[in-house]
Image (cartoon, rainbow, N blue to C red; front, side, top):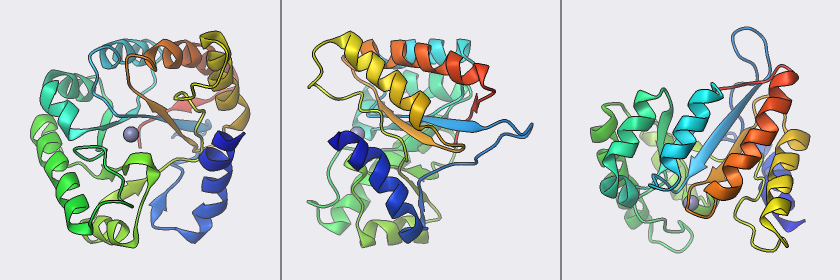
Amino acid sequence: MLTDLLGTTIPRLAAPFFRDITWRGPSHSADGSPCLHLTFDDGPHPESTPLLLDYLNEAKAPATFFFLGSQAERFPELVRAAVEAGHRVGSHGWTHRSAWRTPTTETARDFERAEALLEDLTGQPVQNVRPPYGRFTPALRRWCREGGRRLVLWDLMPGDFLTSLPSREKLIDRIAGRIVSKIKPGSIVVLHESARSRKVVLPALDRALPLLRAKGWTADTL
Ligand SMILES: [Zn+2]
């Protein structure tokens, strides 16, 4: 399927050529168990973030949230709640613009605006940056490098945004199945926050994580 090709195969092939980009996180936790890194883009979202925080807390799965500045401005309490619950906050820019279609200076300004707000809300430096659609340019890579930021993509995209499946149940199956079957130690899994995605992401995680736990996997932030 095209989503597997773009979201998992290509990142794994591209990683050796773009070593300044983070495609995977630490492969094992301190006790030696294999580790995965859940990431959530496009929030905070009032219909998704609170439920996710509850679920991740119960599952003891610290994650990384790539928040949009424009959403963080509307729902600042959700940004604070994520940090207080032990998750890590990264930046997904302010307006969800593609770096391929935006002049370099505007892209930097968009990210800097989001970063300033997120740092203000969390009281922590925002080190992790994920460009919308995973689209990066040489200028964006340089901007990250020179500012001591980490450009974070992923190596496992289960496709929670797909609309082509015949039912919600099939999509949940697909997401959980992809996570369990394609995971590698250190994998960064990209999922999304929206009113629609929470209806598939939460049940899929609830199916996949216990299976991985039973095999000794742990989850951690980036
Ligand atoms: Zn996004």
